[in-house]
Image (cartoon, rainbow, N blue to C red; front, side, top):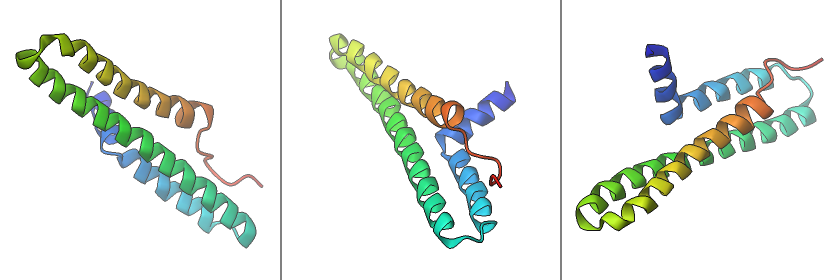
Length: 113
């Protein structure tokens, strides 16, 4: 349970993307061919930027859903359904990030020769 909570904390704080960026820097430093290094550098940069975009969007949606849900409870209970959908959208952006970048296109562990 503790490892699960640590993993959630790393993902919410974007620390796992920082760790992945360190891995990609090591991969890029091991490449001697300058054109190949530039291409891979751009691919890794866009990968990290897309991951950050998914995560920040998910964080904002979940935070807004919690805030609006809390205020809608006392002001307009009819709006709670919208807040639940907003929170579900935030969770879905996390799942999209996980599916796209961890399962479908994982980071290569080392440069292919």
